[in-house]
Image 1 (cartoon, one colour):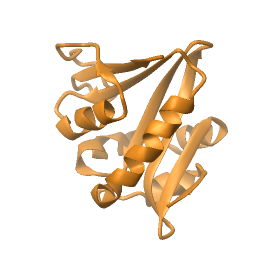
Image 2 (tube, rainbow, N blue to C red; image 1 turned 180 degrees about the vertical axis):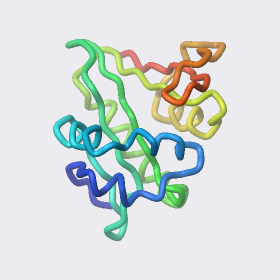
Image 3 (cartoon, rainbow, N blue to C red; image 1 turned 90 degrees about the vertical axis):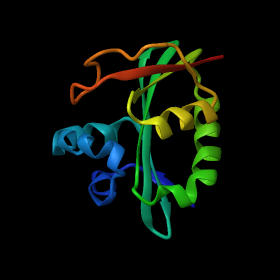
Length: 141
């Protein structure tokens, strides 16, 4: 496993898992260039991207994390989960938020493995970028 600075070409080369495929419509050159300037990374296995991940500071005490995983990331989930925990635990924010599509049970379970707790017992309606429902998770230190 190699962790490198995020580059636009990493996201474009990522064979995005089905549950996140609708996010592809938001991978504009401008958006990807912005992510290159933020705290963003790519996790590679054998030189191939398995996950692009990062965070955006919302306030000095709060950040929002994001991750897009490859279709075949499942075979690397133990390593990706360990990396994700270290990443989130090392962030200097008191609160770290994450959003997941309400229909994406595996995404919900992964956030819980990373130490997040669901804060919305019912999904927020029409909340995510493609108009679907989402749960909000948080990890408060």
